[in-house]
Length: 382
Ligand code: CAA
Image 1: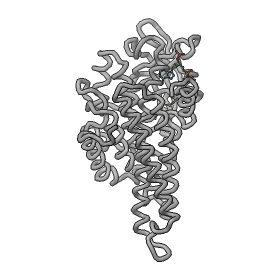
Image 2: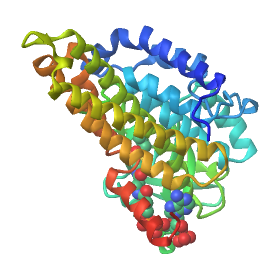
Image 3: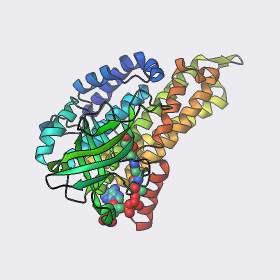
Image 4: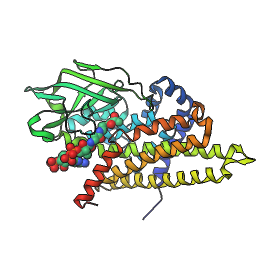
């Protein structure tokens, strides 16, 4: 067993850290407060190769491994997890799904601009009545010969406005249950697509989240991904990788809050000494450091399994559930250590606490991850 990262992995982590600490930090509070999309940063991160990190170079991606992706996501999300989620959805839900299951023509036309970051992708699975219960899709895509006709509503769509390529999961044959679901590549500017208002979220405020309505939208036949009826499994496979991205994002939120808490505890004095010298604070920091380290192992292990071509669905569910729940605890403690200062925006930790909450909800709630893990236990897979 080797616990050391390679030189290349460390270089990628350093590049992400440099950009986050030098650039992302500058206007992060304003972006959060005013819910401003980080356009300039997404362009620069695209130029640096962070939008298509896992995609093979032949499709204009960075050809990096998933461990590097975890390290980069952690560094970026330490400072701005809204940027983290935009990268995560593009990299591990949209690009990965297309690279794994798209046709050569789909990869040439859609994957390449997504991997370069010239275009942003969104993943449209959730619906008003189908969140955790993802197979009860109500959006329909009816086969009309040379095209499908799509109708329905998707919600909570990350990058719903800024994305120009959608991957949409829809029901093509209700009688077949989950085997009657398909995944489609849809042009966000196609006739019949309308967006709901920008969601005014508690956290991750500078990533744009919208509902999307489809009214008689024509989707070309060749835009279906995979064999007929593969859509639900496609979504599940994409989410296995996506959950590594969100787990790493949660890891970054927690380690960002922890680093700020350590810094503050070394500076702030109370009762005649720095507060880190009080056991009440020192033990909190000790628990935070241990929890973060455990989470990092889970994230890296899931990524490593994926890089080795081994099954990683349960590992990614464990990483996501543990890390998201841990991030909520660690950020709450970081606010507590800061006292009143933790409750105001300038000290960053209140934002990290608000951001942490969403990692327990999207790409499968913590409870859904426990379903995935416990079903694997019942089947004897782990
Ligand atoms: N890989 C391949 N196939 C899988 C699979 C996987 N990981 N998981 C399930 N399947 C297959 C099963 O084998 C089964 O196929 P067969 O009948 O042919 O054997 C089929 O899918 C149905 O499986 P289940 O009966 O287990 O399905 P279920 O209805 O009980 O649901 C679930 C399982 C895990 C709860 C799933 O519904 C789920 O993951 N729900 C959460 C949805 C989610 O994560 N949404 C996030 C939205 S995206 C988002 O948030 C993006 C963003 O913008 C940030």
